[in-house]
Image (cartoon, rainbow, N blue to C red):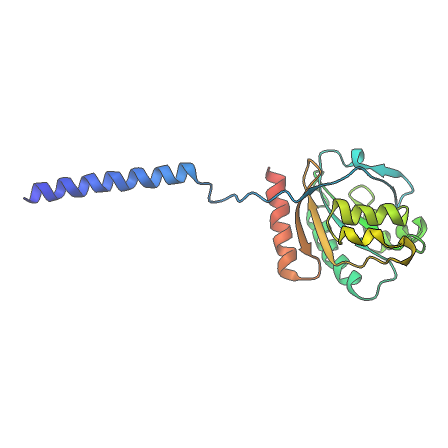
Length: 201
């Protein structure tokens, strides 16, 4: 009777071990794939160093996109304080980039953007401050990065003013993989984690 019990215990032990091994092989507990939310459309903007840049210049890099304006006294300083922390963490990583688009190109000329970038210690190599036509800037925000409702594009562009605190994370293939509140500490921490995940992909 005792031997029979031992045999049963051994059998169920082996069965349980086999099940556990199979679950480990079939499930990746450490990596949760970020969803693909959208694909970035082609663009062409002027950078703070007066160079024209496009999607091709990003190459195979991961990047975070945001929209701000230099005279903002509300959310923008908070956003760019957090963005600078992100920049400091990854500024030596050739696979990472930040794109900061102005929402007020009439005021944020190239010299103004250059001074603003310099005040943050941002290099044009891996933190781009971009300007262009208001129509193109807003179109990218809405149709590429999903940082505003695309329906707002139907309004007269002269009557529009885009003001968003959200950051978009874009992978090496130009796909939006996450949107984060740029003034909330916990969401910025999540963004940092997700950047690391994309760098590993």
